[in-house]
Image (cartoon, rainbow over all chains, first blue to last red; front, side, top):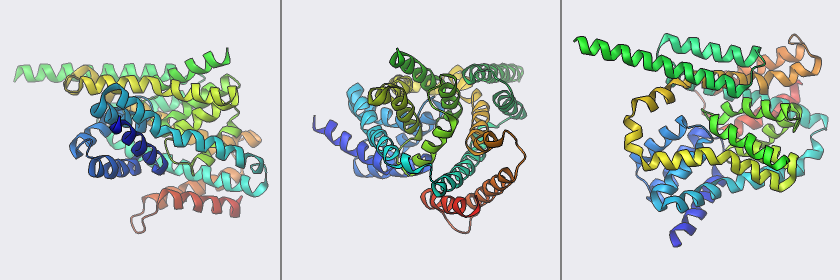
Length: 187
Length: 183
């Protein structure tokens, strides 16, 4: 029982501190979960972060679930996940409620326009980072541009586009794998 | 009825949104606009506000959209539904970790979907940065658009220069000031 309460407090705290997403969250997890609580070691955390990024859904939730599950089974996973998203859940509703009335003011609208362009630059930055892990073969560039073109220039639903592209990527990798298998067989 | 629809839409997003983070934006945008839940101009306000809220911004999105549809219960339903698929997948993977790590089919799928994530991110950049400005006058060619592209370009440069380390929070405050000055 004590460990669950400790988990709740730790992940709630991480949820309150997790500004800036992605890399910032890894640093916080390292400090809180690896150094202070020693629930997982550094190698495990590296593994957890790598898998979290490949699974669908919220990366932060994936890693909280995995850490909670390793430490205290299904209940641990539930506690870690829920407590890590609670701060965000309430803060966004509260802040939106407080600020909404001002968002029609000219100065706030201008500030928001600036912020959204900043977010766009942040997104392009993650395009750059993702490019390094996603593009291993010239065919990956073709797939990436195909996905972009389908998303921007057609009315096909994004879920369908994603499933098609995932199928193509999967098929392509299988094809390459079989090819490499044959090559190895000949040697 | 709304709650059931909300639940299944966010469950679906949670199950297919590979890449997480900003790559989830196209999913939220498509669903909320097609269901007439939230307009893009309201949603981007929430994204701007979310920059000063800690935690995953997908939760900001699900809480807000859910709240607009069915109040606090809607916010809960949307957020929990969004987390269910990855929660389940994370538990299963932790349990059978070694088998997953070495399974070539799992790897072929997880690596195979990455180029599509690039497409999602580029599309997210358009939805957040350019589409709201496009929708003002229904044209891609305008002074505002030119100014926007310049701000994005400078922002990208600032993020990638090595001389001064800038935190995300400082960066966001700076872009707010820039917005007030030039728009």
